[in-house]
Image (tube, rainbow, N blue to C red; front, side, top):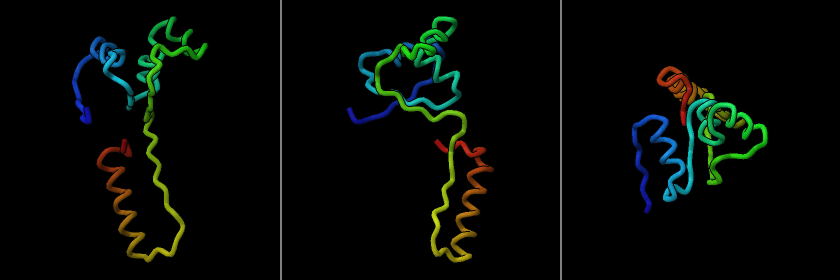
Length: 102
């Protein structure tokens, strides 16, 4: 209790882990296809389950899909130095990992 573990594997391992009784919540990063495969399943049955909103899993699931990493600038009395500092961090973020900041 109170820890996180990462593993490397394929579809079979993913299905096993996502449906395991000791896994209480799932967080998904990746594409919408990955999300839908985990939540609804694959193939024609998965498409049907999605259309009917009948997920395979009833556990809490959160997702970060499709490079949605907004940068929010809050209006305020920023100095030119502060704006330049933050702008350089935004540029670095985009250059280092193409904005994928999950």
